[in-house]
Image (cartoon, rainbow, N blue to C red; front, side, top):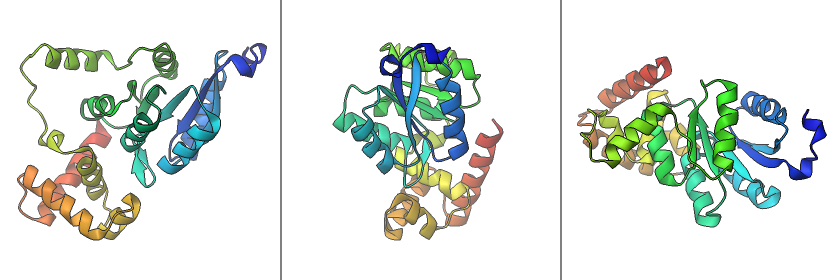
Length: 224
């Protein structure tokens, strides 16, 4: 069916994900739609910025977890250079913790990878139409905050900044200070500074306690 529609009139999508299998799956899924086409796929923030400049996509679909950065970093970079380019964040991470962060960073929508394929297509078309896409659960949560409702009993992890949350997740995944520094392209001293801030916010006394807390948090999120 997609062959009946010239590529020149189909909406061009750039997929940004650090897993080649995921990128291939998205290319195949979205490419079956008569009005959509994946014009490029990359795995890092740097590659994404270059691809946006070179390919001029109509929309970007980005994961939260990327090589040498995050999807939130990419969203912020896009907003600095191209305020009108729609961005949909597609991630395995819990939307109650990341969706609002993504929207605040400038994303136009957030959808979890566990959703049905057709729901992703709906999300893409919703964002392309100039609307914001989040799950019904997140709509209720955001409206409650907007109307001044009582805040939910939050996870203290929600107090972390985007960068601190990224580092906290890496700690919980077992990465060393050196590995985290390499992944984020920062110095080990900067990692230690972030770690100290995280310990203070989470009221954790030692690095061992922080590592255990982070590991439990990552394990819980993986099971959700």
